[in-house]
View 1 (tube, rainbow, N blue to C red):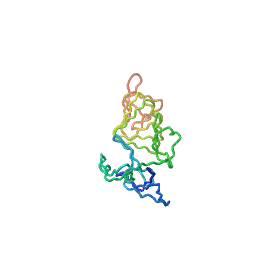
View 2 (view 1 turned 90 degrees about the vertical axis):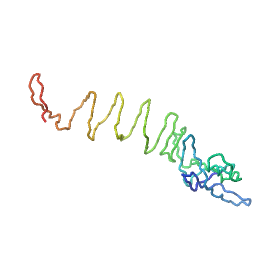
View 3 (view 1 turned 180 degrees about the vertical axis):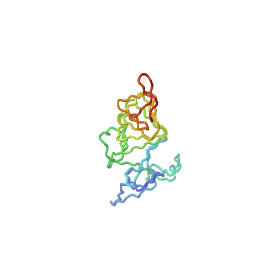
Length: 231
């Protein structure tokens, strides 16, 4: 095994060209740089129908591990294969294992005991704590057919502005719904309530018959009823 640097990488084929970073020294003490290695498969951690894939970039560091025998036939069929040549322990039959080696990485002190997937600066991360999952990002996009959140405790969303967009309708099921602040309904349509409405403030109706001028005809003293409202 030797440390190596990525010269080029094709994510579609998952093959890299790498430069070994440990030189050779001849018997006369002459330093000789090792040749670049082309078409080296890059280790991608995955199993059970899942994969954890990283965008390997030029200049990234890692390790090349030489296989015991020629693996060229295996890379064609990904099945049991006989060696195509008599090569043994040759870096032409290596695998490249990416390793950031914690260069330029800032791990928050709060994550010292956590599992972390993040960018180098830690400004975007997913951290697995012993009792929670913490997501840090400027923007979080979730695309799915169905989204379900089941919280046995309290679910809280805090934001200056929250927007819910539904092409059909939004349903809230709860024994009690409390709204603190101004409630505004725009865009027309009808508001329907099946229960009683109680208000401690004034009611203002912006219609052709304002409540402030809601006069009736046929008013008489006693137990008589009024007539209809005057338009």
